Amino acid sequence: MLVLSPQSLNESYRVLTERRRLDRRDVRDFIAVLVPFCTAPCGTDVLRKAWRVQDAGGFGWWDCLLLGSALAAGCDVFLSEDMQHERIIEGMTILNPFRLGEPASFFS
Image (cartoon, rainbow, N blue to C red; front, side):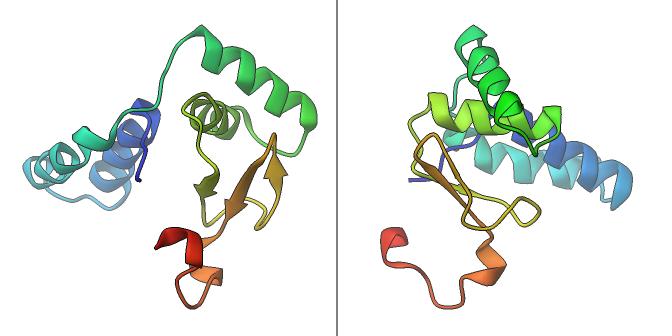
């Protein structure tokens, strides 16, 4: 099941409109499709989990918040193209989807 955080939608919107310079209306329509999957929490529990991830080392603060949100949502897998592939954080595995080749069995 796909789980997104409010932060991931906000970052996507910013990158697509400011860096990629796509039309705001088109990006908003795209983000609107993803909104139903925005079920990860964004409260003080996430903040505490992000602090633990930060203390474990190796991540920038905004990535810590994303990882903390995923942990609070109970995710087993976190997809990222720019974090350490196969690193495990509190039982959650970070995977780079571009390094997987064939779809992994847990995506079935």
